[in-house]
Length: 138
Image (tube, rainbow, N blue to C red):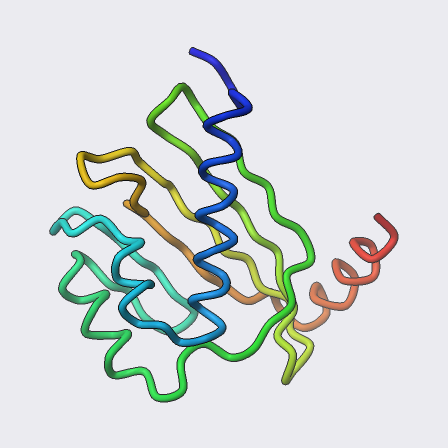
C-alpha cells in the first residue's frame, strides 16, 4: 500500500478544500454530494450524532444559517492506497475564537470520493488558547 501517493493526495486535498468552500457558503447540495449516500455513513457533530445519510441530509436542511464562519489553522490529509483517505482540520471559529477539530474518512466509490465518516468537536476553552497560540508559532 502506498501512503500519500501524490496524485491521490492532490485529488483528496482538492475535495477537502472544496468541502470547506461549500461549508462556508452553506451549499447544502454540495455538502450532501460530498457524503456517501449510505445508512452506514456517520457524522458526529458538536451537538448532534447523525447515523446514516438521511439523518445527515435532514440535519443540513434544518440548520439555519449553516456552519458558523471559521478559519482553518491546519489541514492534514493522508491517503492509504488509492481508495481511502483521512482528512483532519484544525480551525478557529470566527465568532467566538473557539478551536475546533474536524476529521473525515474519505472512500473512493463508484460515484467518486465520498465522506463515509466525519467528526466535529470543539476544545475546552482553556485548551483552545494553548493550542491556538502553539499552532500560530508553526
